Image 1 (cartoon, one colour):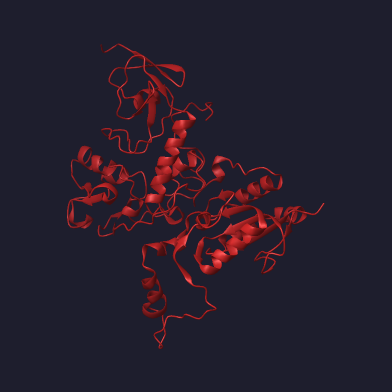
Image 2 (cartoon, rainbow over the protein chains, first blue to last red):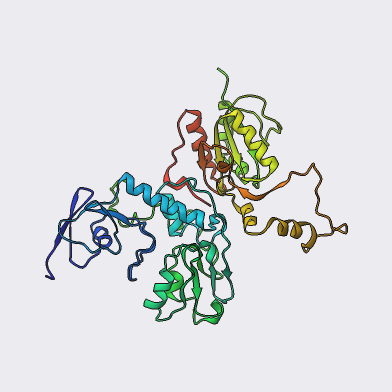
Length: 237
Length: 181
């Protein structure tokens, strides 16, 4: 079994994969970018954001959690799925308070980068301007729930990579929010060097006293769309 | 043939987007060849004088006057463009949407550390436009045809969009010109 390969089709193109891979891993190895937000290399997949939704034999599936199987026919870059992903990103923007113009993460933010890649010039939904608590108690870490997209990357990284349980969820539905394992962040064993802090795709968890270290134009997503590192250079979008 | 007419206004913004327009450098000489300006803070015309081809709106709506100006622009402009993050999502002024309006007033006129207001009254003169309960993006008030995000949109973004619109095309900007900061 170990040397067996599985053949599947992505947008009409055949790719070879190994058993045990997820669709997201298999397509990435073949140079196909499936947009993703809550997925992060090195963490167990979570499947919460649904940005990586593809159609597998006609059914919508999260590419980050679904293992490959022989003969799968996968649709990824279709108008329908682009619209779905665009809507998901759109909703994450209006459901939070994302003030990109003064956010230290701007230019390096995965949420913003997905919006850029999808060409979102203005949201299609009304802004909610929710009330969200921020926590500046920790000497080295800033937690701003206004920018949180509930991807659980900090929750998983704290547990899986840092061997701690600093972050978790509290509340349900629209009231769901990131909670910390203590009265506030200062009363936990969180450290600014924790992988959990670096795992945040947005500016919700920031290391203090770094600020706007990289000039505009040289930040991660200033010139190249997110996913460009996965796609072969010549591939058009 | 008469030149296309352009009108601009800064609603609840900081004039940064207008500054960015001035930042097109020597292309401003081409611009005055290409268009005539109607109402605009740069020529100080206070009211729109007639039909306008392209209206550029900076800033969102934070008070009743902003709404009236925006509606005036929509009535007169064939193409109306939201320019900058404040017009598109409220921007920095929308931070007050997280604070009740009364608290905003009290902080500004009664409790703020630099406030000297012995009367203890919040100004309510009818000359002062009433604040909306919250800052709203322009497209939640009137129909907007195009959006140019950025804080501000760069001079190159504004120039690329304006020249496209003047040529009768929708502004389709390259990746590096669409930014939220």
